[in-house]
Structures are given as structure tokens and as C-alpha cells.
Length: 239
Ligand code: FPP
Image (tube, rainbow, N blue to C red):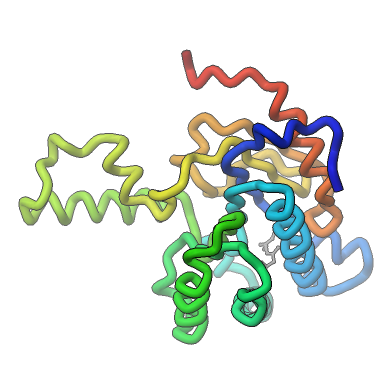
């Protein structure tokens, strides 16, 4: 579906989305929170495929934060299984779709089977030339910056790098997103106006779009309307 307000010849290179509001979407329908997450996962699949078809290049979504472990055991287990199913489905479908899947976040806390599936899917889709879908799983912006700082400190302590050489470019190269440009825009559904520890470093100059709709109700056309609005903004990067 094309949107006449969007100039498809100059799409933003990288979009980040916080998929919030699954729980409230379910509550409004007298369903369990889990049903909201399931609907959210389906919506992600639909929207990412439409974006890929239309030529978007990088989408990063906040699937599970370092703080989400504080939710009930049942909800955490459900979300983990949803991600497992999502990844396994992509493994099955990888031949008929050209999306590259990548995962950012600290994978060390994930179950071994999930970690292995992630690594397998990453390798399987590495040469896909469509959109890259970055799933942020056990991801926290502060955690990512802390891991990068630790990495730099370790290299400095062993003499592999000179502390004087540590600059923004070097720290960026130690982040999980090292190979990607910073997001041009951050979209958050669900009505809350906050970053919630998502890409703290990378959002330095991102345009922010906070919208009321719950994630399962967010449509591809909603995304295109935001992109059209983004294309009208004057980005000065502090200059
Ligand atoms: C926030 O809604 C959403 C999450 C914590 C999880 C996001 C996960 C998905 C959309 C599906 C799983 C993703 C993959 C990759 C399979 P909330 O629970 O905080 O909603 P609420 O604010 O209404 O309670």
C-alpha cells in the first residue's frame, strides 16, 4: 500500500520502534496480557514485511528490555516463548523472504536454545539484501553503554588501546549497533512519552514520535504518515 504523502526515494535509513501498549490492548478486550503480546508479535511481522517490500532498510524494535525480567514469571516465560516461535518461524521462512534478522542486547542471560536459534538465524540471513530487522532482546541502553565502556577499559588495561584514543567513534564501534547508522526516528506507541532505556546513545539526534495507539492497533499506514511528517522536519543536528 503506497501513501501519497511519502517520498519513497528518500526514506529514512533507520527507524526504531518501542512497541508499547500490548497489555492495555488486551485488557480493553477482556483478554489476558499474553494475548496482547501475541497480537503485537503478529503486527510486527506484518509491518516489517510491508516495510521490506517498500524499500525500508533498517528497523530496530524493542522486544524485551533489561527491566522486563521484573514482570511476572508467567509473562516473562510467555514473552520468551513468543520470541522463540518468532525466530523459529523466520528460520523456516528464511528462503522465501529476504529480510536479514539481527539481535541487539545482552544474549548471555537467554536460554541456550534461544541463543543458538538466534545465532543460527543471524547466520542464515546474513546475506539477505532486504531490510535488516534488529530485535532488541534483553536490551538496555545503559547496559549497552556499560558493556562498551568495560570493553574499552579492558583493552586500555592490557595496552591494546591508548586511553587517549577513546572517543565517540570508538565507543560507537563497541555498541551492539556498531554497523548501523543511528535511528533517524524513534516511534513509541501506547501514549507514554519516555525513552525507557532504549537506544540512549543512538537517539542523540533522532526525531521523536509518540503516538497514542496501542501497538497491536498500529498500522503500516500509521507508520507511513509518521514518515511523511518526518520528511517535513528540518534536522539541524545541533548546527
Ligand atoms: C510493551 O507492552 C511490550 C513489550 C514489553 C513486549 C513487546 C513484545 C512484542 C510486541 C511481541 C514480541 C516480540 C517479538 C520479537 C516476538 P506492555 O506489556 O508494556 O503494554 P502495557 O504498557 O499496555 O502494559
